[in-house]
Length: 258
Image 1 (tube, one colour):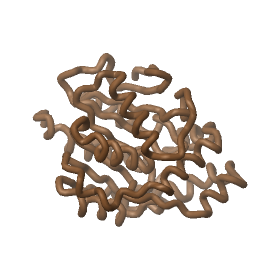
Image 2 (cartoon, rainbow, N blue to C red):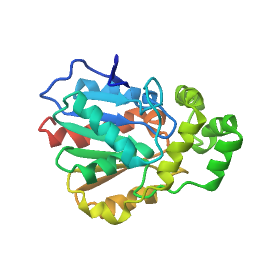
Image 3 (tube, rainbow, N blue to C red):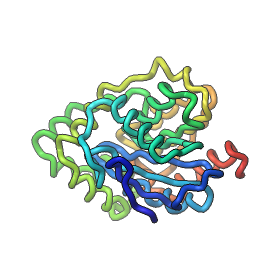
Image 4 (cartoon, helix red, strand yellow):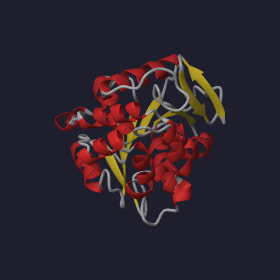
């Protein structure tokens, strides 16, 4: 696993240097998170493609400040992709990361070859209780991740590295992430997306239920929906093999690698 920074943005890569003849997956984590979320996919999928997972500004090992709008984060990710001279990028994001993917595909449709959204939606309204808990009891919010972010069938130990990472993210940055989600709404624009698009939803996701994914799949013409059983909001860590398989089966045929 290669670890580095580009213009202050920390990232991990499954193979380094990148192979220009292979597609490159760019993974984006969820609110208050870090690239730890995607480590299993970065490692496993690197046998077939380039894999990179970044930390958004102010998260994980990245420098800079967090933001409170998805358009701002999308610009950061786009600059990051350009800084690494990635020629065949496929962007994949969970939750707020999924919103960032949608924004990139809508604003820069010629640049990204395909998109993958995991447990996210075209509109990401946040329950007021989450903001209240972030404000008054950040530790309680972090500990609550084991309740509201995973399936009852998931061993909490599987997601502990991510939850520990979230505890290190400044509360103001996590709140900014949720503010960005709360103001995000591209429901009326989904028909503009023309590149191949994969929606991954989790059957036990309490935060972004399967209906969010179904709506996107129904309104994006060239899309595929995959539902991961017995997993919650953090399915890349709860069911890493299943998520990696869905990504591989979607991406490789697009580049004639299947």
